[in-house]
Length: 303
Image 1 (cartoon, rainbow, N blue to C red):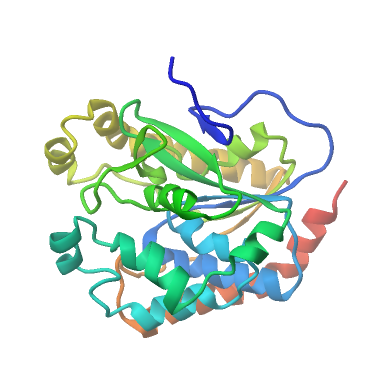
Image 2: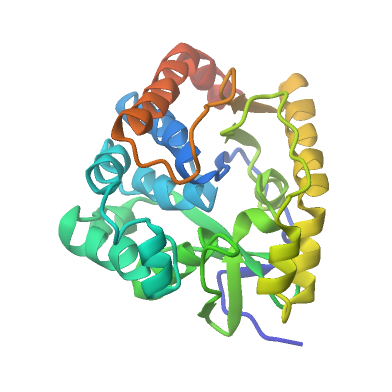
């Protein structure tokens, strides 16, 4: 059996549930639908909302890390600034680098040079932060605790956001990984398994959304043929996703979790380049967060 480093949780979450109240933040992905999440999180920062931990999938991780580093406005700033830069996201980048979202530009040049990420504040913030990636070999999710956002941990974050077909398989710590949304798009159960009792879930689709089978499964089979369990995970993704969302809203209806999601489809491309559209979706997240902020405070304050 493969050994896993501390901080890696392959497959399902541990069974033990530490006693006591723990406030969790669960962040769905969705590529540029993540601008909605960024808007919500910036309002949370401005209002002093605090969590004990967060788990992000794909864009939920790449944008959500700015909540731990307490950099309100950073996600919308660099996305609008670089949306038309071919090095950030383009078919040219896919042809030149093998990744639609350029790995070096997104995970080196932006955080280290062009719009610096506050690594020190990230490390000093006691809030735990996890990302979810998908193991191409096993077809199962892997959960990684990101403590420093150093180069290796940024590689994990890149893996979490590496969309199949549009990205190379990411190799790190003995794993071959792709987008966490392939296997666990809404990791609420993972956080509950870690003992998080008061969870706020931010989704980027409205409540009535149901995922349908992908019309690109033929291409998945062609591109990921050497990873049959990853292909099977993609085939089952709609079923798994819809069941997870049903579980989230059933718990929300019982008052066990609080959900923030768009009231209608956001109507934005996963690879949107129009800065006005990015800001529109970001502002939609801000407006809804403002409208729900008292409910969030009340929920997190419960015993």
